[in-house]
Length: 396
Image 1 (spheres, rainbow, N blue to C red):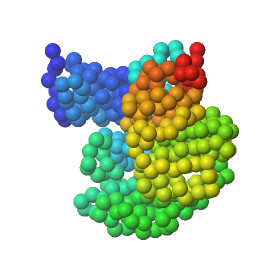
Image 2 (cartoon, rainbow, N blue to C red):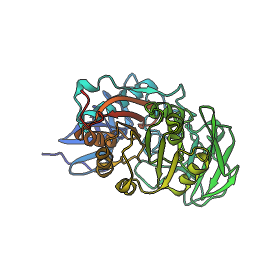
Image 3 (cartoon, rainbow, N blue to C red):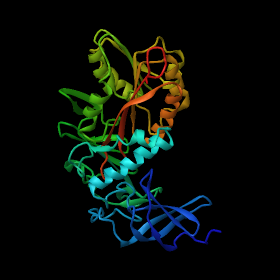
């Protein structure tokens, strides 16, 4: 029998394991709570924010027994009822990575179907030494009073603030501009800043320079690019390492063509098919890949393109959205039996689901690197290499 509880009630909770999404699990009165702003092992007073028949939610509002990993919160709008972005701001950075490692391993076993001893070798590692001031793109929403701010967790309500501590120094504070819906600031690798108000560039160049290895990329300020300045280059090193001269590779969900360019350099006289559905990113890709004749850029939905894609590639780089590639796309790739699939994942649970489908098709996880590319949040990036032998049988 579950004890009655209502939204707004304050209850005492002993905090248990971390769960995907930045929550921690606690049990009270026959109910399971997902708790924010806590750390495993803490005893807290928590305000109930949502009650359902299966799970309920709460925010830790008073820490009765703090974790040794707890640190003072440096942002005035973080915490219960505040901005929903920095859900780990109260946790020491190395402890954040330990918690993310637990989430990673849990996804690999629970969703991916691997055994516990198979995943012990994997952990989330630091990308660089920055825990604040790393974000090269910051977006403020505008509330009904015309004030800029950030959204509360799971809410359309905006918390007024002029500052974001995650933003790189030049874009950490919003400019004094008029906007009805949003203001976005982008800082390129050359330190030039572009500001977009309500979808229109009002300050700086419309194209941002991003540097990867020794190459300059010209990217639409409105388009997609990795928000941590150190991430793009590291992802290239991991995602393109398996490509060999003369091979044929697919780059799926290819965005501005980042991986396609360095796959092209690796395959030389081989071939790369770059597939992306977002028109602005396709334009960026065609501009940046103009000199690489071995690359064919396709503006298409990935699943639809795979239905009629010619040939059998030697390898695939797969960088799907946060929801994952899904069964249809994974199955279509596996049917072609590429020797190598490099999966770039921003959500460990979605990756785990797709990994299970690949494993059922004979692929095995041969290499995995996870990077703490989004400090002070629960997010992290994973690059996994999946392999199968040339006849489609699993490598033992």
